[in-house]
Image (cartoon, rainbow, N blue to C red; front, top):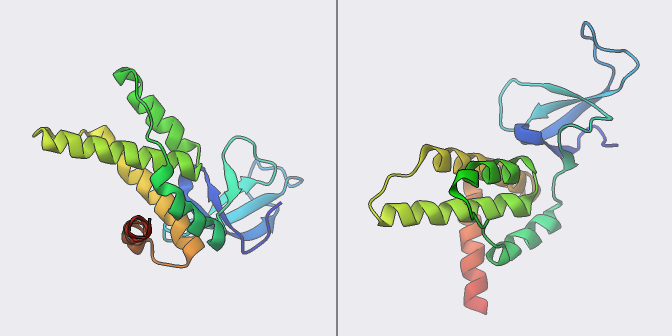
Length: 171
């Protein structure tokens, strides 16, 4: 069980801070069930309630600062998603994104990022699906890393690039 003040990743809502644990006073909701009340970190004036015993939506603690730093160093080793059937591309994107697993989301970002570069090099437009999933994946991963590394979400992309360049220069 999480505690008040914990930062968690809650499904497609991204990073949230738990502000209350208790009963929810809403019509039709059992007063015997405990709920987490959470405030999404990057959505203003929004609040979410989720059952403590929820099994339907991913709810996990964000990475610690140490785990996030280690994760960033491992990004170059993360493999891209192998799309063998073009018709399954969007399904694979959704599965990676909604897993809420940082490695799978980084893999998705790398996969789509390379695909965007290839299409642009060929003079083709970026597909709306690629663009949408790329931004959703960056938003999800960068949001978690920003909280873990205690930085602004807007600075995470540049931070990752600098760390990767630094690691490549050392090796």
